[in-house]
Image (cartoon, rainbow, N blue to C red; front, side, top):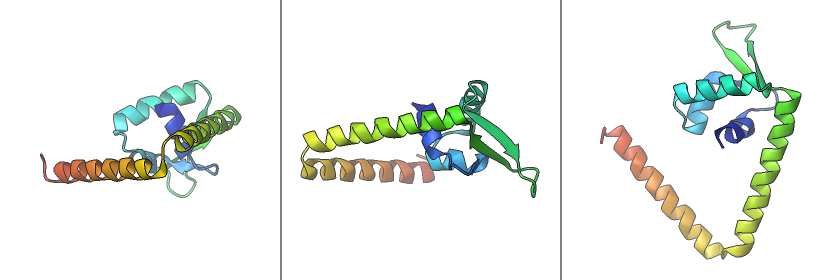
Length: 113
């Protein structure tokens, strides 16, 4: 699931590796391990910035692009099934509650609780 989420989070033109973690809410060690695995499976490749050698961009390989499209169509199909079977009002309530729970978690994390 993490691999699919990363594939969907990488811009087709490349994404700075430092922006992936915060965008996805992943810790750097988990992200690094997953990126290494994806690189070993030839889904991504890394490129140092020509302007700032400290910055590394993550790019999708052709296989990575194919897998990204597969992940995207799977998500779209799943969402379509959910939206067909659950009334709009119930989904809105679910998203509201989920958002509030995330807000509480964020506030607790900021307060060290």
